[in-house]
Image (cartoon, rainbow, N blue to C red; front, side, top):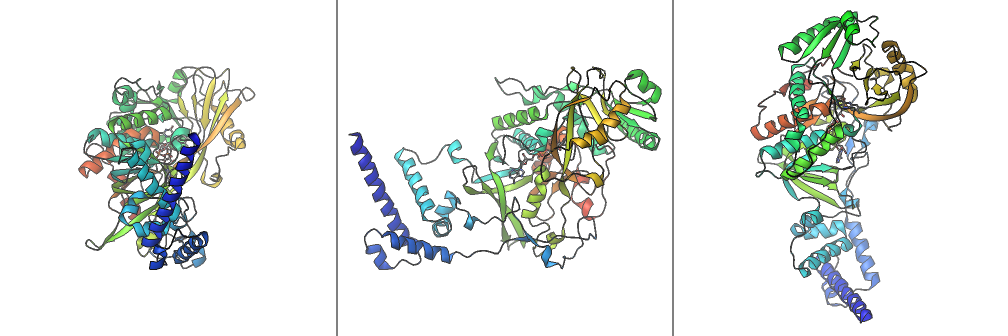
Amino acid sequence: MHCMIKKSNHFSSKIFDSFVKQFYLRNFSASSSPSDGDSNVPTKTNDDDDKKKLTKQRKKPEPRKIVVIKDHGNVLGTGKKDDDDDAAVNIGADGVPYNPVNDPHYSNSYMMYKYPQYFTKNIGFTRAKNIVKEDISLLLDGRIHKTREEIGCPNHVDVCVFGGGIIGTAIAYFLKEKAPFGLKIAVIEKDPSFTRCSTALSTGGLRQQFSLEENILMAQYSSEFIRNARKHLSILDGEPPDLSYHPQGFLTLADESQAEQLIRNHQKQIEMGTLVELYTAERIKEKFPMINTDGIVLGSYGVQNEGWFDPLALLVAFKAKAQFFGVEFVHAEILDFNFKNDYHYEKTTCNYVVVREPDGNVRHVEFGLGVIATGYESHKIAKLLGYGEDVDDWRSVVNFPIEPRKRYVYAFNSKDGPGLNFPFLIDTSGTYCRREGLGGNFICGRSPSNDEEPDVDTLDVDYSYFDRRVQPMLKNRIESFDMTDMKIKGAWAGYIDYNRIDQTPLIGQDPFFKNLIWATGFGGLGVQMSPAIGRAIMEFLLYQDYKTIDLRAFNWERLFNNKPLKEVYQY
Ligand SMILES: Cc1cc2nc3c(=O)[nH]c(=O)nc-3n(C[C@H](O)[C@H](O)[C@H](O)COP(=O)(O)OP(=O)(O)OC[C@H]3O[C@@H](n4cnc5c(N)ncnc54)[C@H](O)[C@@H]3O)c2cc1C
């Protein structure tokens, strides 16, 4: 009985295959003659010939090119193209030109039913057959549609967020919280385990001490949000999120050359209601006896709303609440965008993103509004959108300003090091250090100067950087850190999304594609600013304007107009 069933299954699958083959050849093969359709099941040779003919018919498109811009008229580009043709290189999401025609896994069932001929020609017979087979098996199962999980990627959404790090996820959360029923939102993330994203590798510092008003306001709101994350991000019947928030002020030290700027910043901060205090060297010594105040003139200390927290826990909490509200998180990699010329409005629009799912299937997602939150990989998205590429308009001369920069974090143990009273220290050299728990564990780091920026090909750690540039500073500043006692326990490296022009974020409408919004370039601040950014982008998308904190200063215009911003507090 068992054997019979097997045999009959085999038999019906054979009939099915030959039926689909004939159907395919009759309807879609350009080479099939009427007599082909009348003949019996095509032999292997006929089938091979047809395949070869189809392959010949495929037109191999030219690989896309970017032009490397060498000289800048304004901060972004020259206004004229580089003549050097040799500088043109092929591109794609990972530096490889992507072409769906050459992708053996290309699949898009939606496109198939709309354009069957296009689909079968591009995708090949086997794949087309499998999709029809899959749909028939659904029907036999008594269903027409697949479940949400089976479908994976949606075909159409109102808002598509590119990148599911903390910024993208916070944006999705705020949007869906404000418009729970009206908006279909998807977040596309290629690595939901977050192994390399900046968020997971950050140190989770939360501070109020900035020089730009926008940053001060965002820090105030974000600090309120993060300290009350349980209230904002709890889910009915679920465990409230635990961000491991450690309240502890930042102590920013200033030598003689830095003191004037520190006073200016301090004044602005207190005018805006930030709880910070300015200390003389004597007062610093009194309050923090472990600190060597040689060469120190002033110190600014945050008495409230500062500390550190677990960035990944905040990301997970944002994601869980966004999912609870109905945001779809799609596990897929963004490969490309599809543009169309809208002749009515005489513009090119970008409403399709091409993504590859983990099983290799490549799909189109149609979207109304797109938010680019791909962190340190935003320059790759910029290329896909034509920036710095060989396109026929001004985008070709824009040298996208956000790039990855590598930062090291070192974890060390010093059994005689300071305890609970130790602030989040920012030394005059830019070296930072904070405790990690209370067992004599600390983490520290320092941003390299421009000429010692490490290469960004890998996330390898340079341990000699600690010996050369970090340890001597700390040893000098913290008296109880004994050189022989400081033992490195571990280290990691992460990329920040660095704005090489003015080190401040790029937030706002894309200058070319009006339905795209950028939220990137946060450097060392993205984690702590994520609630404020999420809320701001929500306002921008839903009300076409910022309602609470005006972030227009961070848009593209400042770069086109050669008016870079400057945030003094960076590390
Ligand atoms: C060592 C270190 C210390 C830091 N310390 C602090 C700190 O103390 N305080 C603070 O506030 N900030 C800190 N930061 C900065 C902070 O981590 C970042 O600013 C923030 O995480 C940026 O978030 P994001 O969502 O924009 O980027 P990410 O977290 O990098 O997320 C971007 C996501 O986009 C996805 N993506 C990219 N390309 C594609 C594609 N083609 N298809 C699909 N998905 C894609 C990536 O997989 C990634 O998950 C630190 C960063 C580092 C590296």
